[in-house]
Length: 529
Image 1: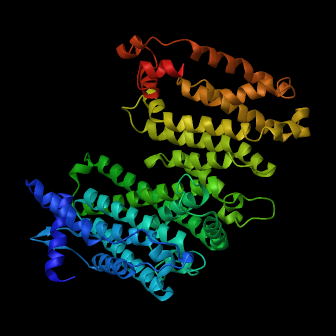
Image 2 (image 1 turned 90 degrees about the horizontal axis):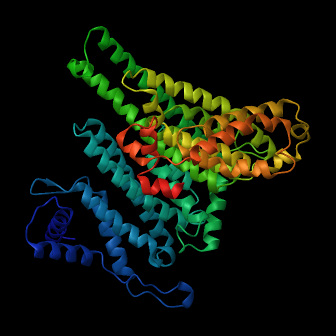
Image 3 (image 1 turned 60 degrees about the horizontal axis):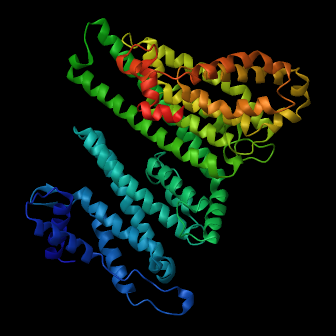
C-alpha cells in the first residue's frame, strides 16, 4: 500500500467514524465504498476435502497483511486528526474476517499461520500496553478508558476465533503465548482481554446457540485442550481474583483515610492540594482498574461455573484440580459483601450457576452451611456502608440492594430445588436430629426472611421450592418444617393483595420506592400479579 492509498484509506476511515466532519452525502458513500473495496475478496471458499483450489487466496493474504500493518503501526493521523482507534478497529475487523474464512482454517501454510498469529499477538500486546499507559496518564480518563474497552473487546473476539480454529492441535503453546505470566508478573496479554476471550470460547464451544458454525468435533477438541491446561490456568485465575480484590480493598481503605484526613481539616476532595489530588487520582485509578478486572474475571468464572467441568470450581471428592488454596466457592462467598460495580451480584451469579449443576452431597452441604453466614456478613457490611451515608434511609438501602436481594432469593431457592433428593435420602435429616438439621433450619430461616421482603419479586423467586416442599409427603410433615410455614403463607397472602397504583404515584404507600423499583409501571405489575 503506497502513501496515496494509505491517505485515501485513512481519510475514508475518518469520515466514516465521524472524526473528519463532512456535510456531503457523496463523501460518506465514497468512503464506505473505499473501505469495503479495500478488504474485498471472495469469502465463499470450497472445502479442502472437495479437491478444489481457492482462486482468491493471494488477495485474501494481501488484505490480511495490509490490515496487520495498520494494526502494528503506532498511530494514525491525518491533518492533525488522531484516527488511531478507528483505524485499528477497522484493521481488527479485517483480520477477524480472514480468520473466520477457510483460507485461514484450511489453506494457508502452517508456517504462515504461525507467523500471522505471532504478529497478531505482538500487535495486540503493543496496543493494550499503549492503551493502559494512555488511560493512566490521559486527563480525559473516561474517553481513554472507553477506547481501551472497545479495542480490548475486539482483540478478545479475534483471540477467541483463533483459539477455536487452532487450539490445541495447531496451537499447542496457547498457555505460554497468551496466559503465562512474564517476569513482571503480568499476563502475556492484558488479563481482562484474556478473561473476555475465554468467555467467548466457552460460550462458542459449549452451546450451539452462541455459534452454530463450529463443528461438534472442533468443540470437543477445544474443550479437551482447555481441560488439559486448566491445572495451570485456574490457579492463575484464582491468584488474579485474590490480588485484584486485595488491591481494591487497600485502595478503598486508602481513599477513605484521605477523605477522613480532609474532614479533620474541614476540607473536601475539591479542596485538595496538587500533590494530594495527584495521589488521590493515582489510588482511584488503581481502584477502578481493579474493579473492572474483577468484574470481567467473575463474568468468565460464571461461564466456567455453568458450562465447564464441575471440578474446575468445586472440590469433588478426591478428583479435583481445585486445591484448598484455590477455593473459588469461598472467594465468591466472600465477595458477596462488595457492592462496587455489582461485584456482589456477579458473585451470586457464579454461585447460582453452580447450584444448577449436579453437586455432590458434600459440596451441597458446604453451600447450605456457608451461605447464611456469608449473606449475614455481606448484609452487615452493606448496612455499615449505608450508615456512613446519613442521607440514605432504610428504604433507600432496600431499593439500592433490590437486585442483589433478588439474586440471593433465586440462589437460595435453586440450591434446594436442584438437590431436593438430598433431603429425602438423608437419614439424619429425615429423623430431624443432628448438625445437618440445624444447618437446614438456618438456611430455611434465611429463605423465610427473604420471602417477607417488601418486593414481591423475592417471593416469586421461591414459590416453586416452597410448593415442592409442601407437596412432598416425606418433607411436609417433618417437625423442622413447621416453624417456617406460617410466615411463608402470610408473606404470600400479603403479596397477593393488589396494590393501588395511585398510592404509588402519590407516594402514600409505605414502600412506594421499592415497588417502583420492582416494576416499570402498573401494566407490568398487573401482569406479574
